[in-house]
Length: 278
Image (cartoon, rainbow, N blue to C red):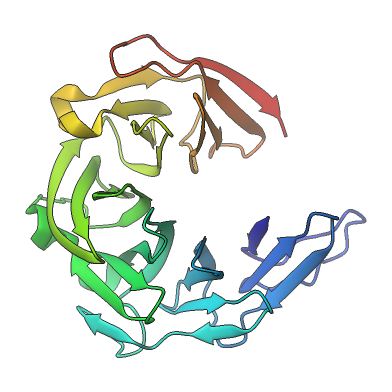
């Protein structure tokens, strides 16, 4: 199990843990904890990280993308092509990452707040090549609050990207690390959290505490089903399992929520829910 450290925090006795905001750590099967200080990192928070092709890949607020191999060796990648701004860093903040089912590519979101441009990008984990694609060019959507791509989930043919400042979600056509076009659906509110369940359904958690379901073969606003949850804030993320979703309520961080009995594509029944005290 891998984790990231956002900022120094107290340990069980109330003393500072000593973990900086640019640390990635792991728990082994026997409970051993390792912390890898991202010494090549320029000092930004590490948000997104994902395993692919024998390495853990990560991105940070400084626009750096790197990887850690099984021996703990870290590499900061500089092989950027396409809409890169570095030439060795992404255009903005690397937010979230998702591994493609092909076992080769990692996809990520990049919000360039300074220039009001949003990107999705891909990493070829075999060659280290990194490309970025302007989301506004792909979908042509109007974003009154400026683009802020954040959450991402990937299937075989599509990347799904949410927007932290606008109530939209994109279905982006992808192939071999290239994004070619995008379709946009409108959500009830802005959103971060997005996940694909094993049966292929797309779920998006928005800032009003809604769960929104899409059938990828019928991806549009009219085909969206919205379920109001008991959460008081926005889901920070969604983790999908067979017939269930897990998230943390962003308003308090005090409860882990489980949503189960997810309805199949042919049903509009609401999922069951339960709060798990943290």
